[in-house]
Amino acid sequence: MLFKPIQEKGQQKLADSSVLIVGAGALGTVIGNQLVRAGIGKVRLIDRDYVEWSNLQRQMLFDEDDVIEVVPKAIAAKRKLEKINSQVSIEAIVGNMSLENVDDLLDGMDVVLDGTDNFSTRFLLNDACFQKGIPFSYGGVVSSRGMTAFFIPYVTPCLRCIVDEGAGGGQTCDMVGVISTAVDIVASHQVTETLKFLTGNQEALRNSLRTFDIWSNYQYDMKLSTSDQGCPVCQKHDYPSLKKSAKAEETVLCGRDTVHIHRKSAIDLEHWENSLAATASVQRTPFLLKATFTEGFDLVLFKDGRVLVQGTEDPVQARSWYDRYIGS
Image (cartoon, rainbow, N blue to C red; front, side):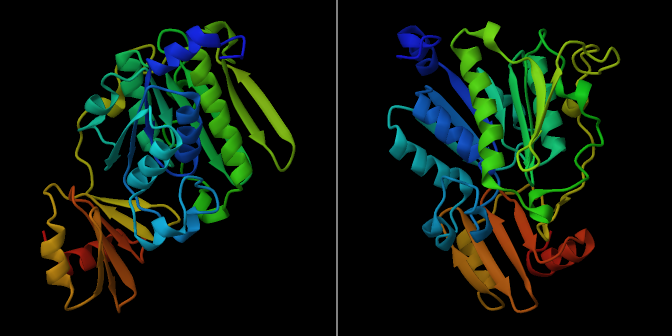
């Protein structure tokens, strides 16, 4: 409140605001930490994964106990954030952002912040935000490089104007690593632009796509001035990612030696704990069941019906293991 551009009036605006954070990994945990400490009113966050040892180097809300207890990231983040600021309403969802739930997740939100690791989800968020008129705070980071922009429907171009549909097939954090300082910078830019918008300081918005390499001492800003006249979203209002299409059940999580299998029906963790105990070493938590097999792979079952097959990036092999022990 002592900061002149915000003051008491701006602080109250933050307390009256709601944000959605998609992804509770590296970016998402920094974003959540900063927004909750800033006194945002409501935080809704969604993540489909659980905490692993390799996360601790950069995902600031987690600790070794979360790994040992195999806690879903959304739940672990909620627990830490509630200890930071008990006045903030925090809703944690263990699940996958998809066409089926995007409308419900965006309902009532003032800003959506990107903490994801793939462009298919980012395009889904971009399209949904522009359809609903909700600002989208985009961020991406890998190695020592980062990229961030704040997109506002009817004011700026959208993500599709500056990033090709086929983006995202290059390097990932799990392939080439990432330093946490680059994560902090990207997330801080995302949160700062969000704070400017929510407190009514739109004239201070950067209005650019910022890219940088903190290790090589490089930074570049590209102004968000002109939309692509052929853009299906902000020009033609077509929203490609919001159209229903046949999707494969298997999704390869690049660089993680994991295949994500989408299963429609819910999973009874107690039932599968008993069923798999004869052939695997099992560990059940209130949120998931992890089964480790002697063949060198793991199955991680979530209550909402999702299964991670860890130990391969081959969808055929993953499906073979899945069908052998889980079935259709």
